[in-house]
Image 1: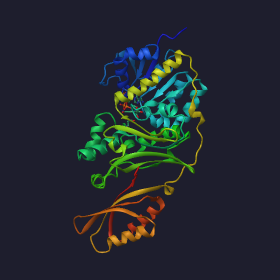
Image 2 (image 1 turned 90 degrees about the vertical axis):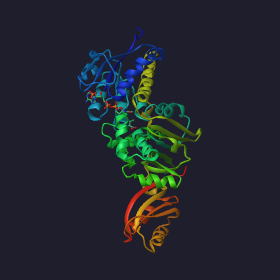
Image 3 (image 1 turned 60 degrees about the vertical axis):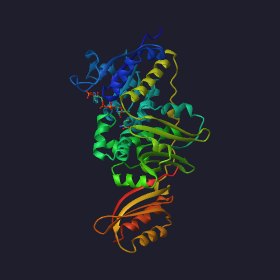
Image 4 (image 1 turned 90 degrees about the horizontal axis):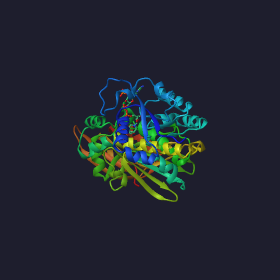
Length: 430
Ligand code: NAP
Ligand code: HSE
C-alpha cells in the first residue's frame, strides 16, 4: 500500500527545531508536493514542557520521553536537532535499529561517530542525512557528494563558523569589542550552547572533518586537524591587517597533496580582494578547487533557525521521495579510505607577527638576522612608537615552511630586547 504521509519524530525544539516547524507550516503545500506526501510531525522531544517557546506548537506533541519517538513504529524519520554527543548517539542508534531514517544538524556527532552510525544505518537498510550539519542553509554535503562527483578535489577553504565570522565582522566594521559581538551572536541563536566550541575553532573543525571526508574520499578524525580559534585575535591585529590590505578570517582549510592530506582551522590574513574576505556576519562560504571544474564558491547564511531548517527539510524531502519511490540507500561514505595526514611543520605559509620590543638601536637588525639565518624572507614591516620606550612592530614574511618560521620565532623570543610576542597568524595570498 502506498504511504499516505511521512511521519517525523523531532528531537529538540530550540533554534533549529523551531525553524523546521515554522518552514513546514509556511511552505506546507510546496513541501507536500515535493515530498510526494504530507509531512506530519508526530512527536517532539524537549527537556522542559513548561518552557516559553518562540513558536506555538500543540502541547500534545511535546514529550520528555525519547521512547515516545524511538519506539513508535509509525515514525519513519527521526530529525535530531537537540545537539550533544553521547546521549544523542544512543538515541540515533536506537532509531536506526528500529528502522527509522535519521536527519541530523549535529556536526559534533557526525564528525566523531559518523562512520559508525552510517555503518549501523547500512546494516539496518537505512541512511543518515546531514546537510544541515555544515554551512547552515548552504547546500554543501549534496554538491560535494553528487554535483562535484566527477572531480578530484585538491583544496577546500572556507568560513564555516557563523559565530566567529559574526564576531570578526563586528570587530572589523563596527569596532565592536569581542564580548559584545559574542553576546549579539548568542542572542541571534548562532552560537553553540557552549560557545567555546565556536571560539576555539572546534565547531569549524568538526565541520571540516565532514567536508574533507566528502572532498577527499577519506576518513578524517578530529585529531588529524590543527585547530586554533579566534581568542587570540586582538582589535589591533584587525587594524594592522586592514592597513596592510588584509582581512582576518577564521578559515578551515583542507588540501590533498601528493604526500597526503593537510587539514587545519586557524585565524588567517587574506587579501581584502579575495572572495572570502567579502563574507561578513554569520554568512559562511566554501571555496572548492577541483581538477575538472576549476574554482567554485558556495556562499550563504551559515547559521540561524530558518537557513538551517531549510537544509533539514531538504533532507526530509529526499527521505520522503526515496520512501515513495522505494529507492535503495547507497551509503557512499562507506568507500572512504585512510590517507596520510601531513604535519603542520611541513606546510608552507606566509606569517604575520606582532610584537613589542625595546625602542632602541639594533632591534630591527637582530630581527632581520634571526629570520635571515632561518631562511625566512620578510615582505612587509611596520613600526609604531608606543608607551614607555616600547615599539610595536608588525611584520609579514614571504611563504616559508612552518618549521623555519618556528625556529626563527624561538630565537626572537629569547632576545632581551623583545618584551612580548603579541600575535602570530598565517597569511594566505590566494
Ligand atoms: P538549542 O536552541 O539549544 O535547542 C536544543 C533543543 O533540544 C531544545 O529544544 C532542548 O529542549 C532540546 N534538548 C537538548 N538536550 C535535550 C535532552 N537531553 N533531552 C531532551 N531534549 C533536549 O540548539 P540549536 O541551536 O537549535 O542546535 C541544535 C543542533 O543543531 C546542534 O547540534 C547544533 O550544533 C546544530 N546547529 C545549530 C545551528 C544554529 O544556527 N543554531 C545551525 C546548524 C546546526 P528545551 O527547549 O526544553 O531546553
Ligand atoms: N554555532 C554554529 C556557527 C552554528 O556559529 O556556525 C551553525 O553550525
